[in-house]
Image (cartoon, rainbow, N blue to C red; front, side):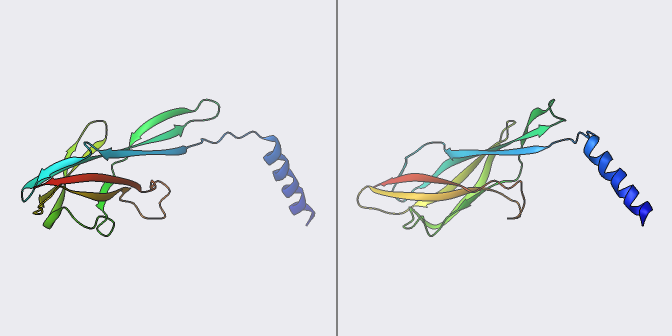
Length: 157
């Protein structure tokens, strides 16, 4: 018993008086994005497309205090989602397509939204609502909060 207490006291003394520097790694998410052009205008009953861009650069703090450095890292889990309910009424008819149009070296994603404009008799204004997300589990600490984007679409007769 005495021997156990002695080693416990020695361990606590070493713990409090030994300065152990641990490497610190922090994370600061920065997701940006939006419409390349707003509003966009399409003629009635024709095909149209526009671009939504997204960029997710994460900042990592790496190193031992006080010699930490920041590193910019491209998050490659970017994804664009379309909010069907919030976008009603739709400017497009039958179907729409979202495709990845480009991925630049700086980590910028460009998403193309294609659709066929509905037939209208007078100029009509619509709104498409999107969300920019990371394709990560909802409990993943590296998942950025969803970022909402609204694209205004005018359809001319």
